[in-house]
Amino acid sequence: MSRKIVPLSPEEIKKMKAACRLAARSLEHVGSFVRAGVTTNELDQIVHDYNLTHGAKPATLGYHGYPKSCCTSINEVVCHGLPDETVLKDGDIINVDVTSLLDGFFGDCSATFFVGEVSDAARDLVEVARLARDKGIEEVRPGALTGDIGFATDKFVSRRGYSTVKEIGGHGIGRTFHDEPFVPAFGKKGRGELLVPWHCITVEPMVNQGVAAFVEFEIPNSSIKYYKTSDNKLSAQFEHTVLITDTGHEILTLP
Image (cartoon, rainbow, N blue to C red; front, side, top):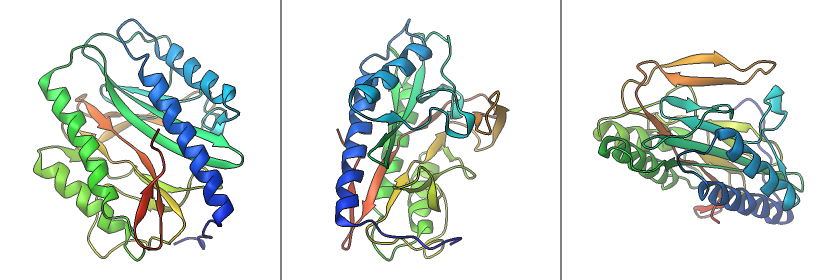
């Protein structure tokens, strides 16, 4: 662990819960607009307006130069896809990643949506990604280690015939957008960093249809990169922000 984790106070937990509820509702709201013919820029504007209307800021906007209010990752894009004039088409899958900054605290969540009628293969991948997130969350408790989360997600994903992205994963979150610890989607039981009570993490395994490898792309005027699968096969992801309690965990990014 590179630096000491400071647990949240009861008052800070209330603020964190409010930020996470807003993020979840923002994600649910934008998801209702996902359909063929919509551009990712239009989805981005919906997220932007929803956050501002509810007294929050979309945390990605301006973060390390990132120019948009959410991330929209279509088909083979693993994460950090940049909203633009790309038009969604029937059969696409799209991950929308939303982070709300409210009263000094960050709530972070994402989901992968179907655009119209998708293939059975895409539907299965997306369901595995959702369940992989949930398998990881089941391991969250005080005294557990990040490797326990990664082991559970990777075991489930690999048994279903898919791959987990190794180099990108979840993270601590709360007073800052990205904090310790790194929460990988693979690992060994009993290894990794300790989960601290009254601290929050994100659990967000990225699941690839083919190989785990990806290719990195620059975003102009930003240190943030976006990534595509190296074999151009589909990738899917779901994410929750989770509070580690004194006895287990609480999922905060529920609408």
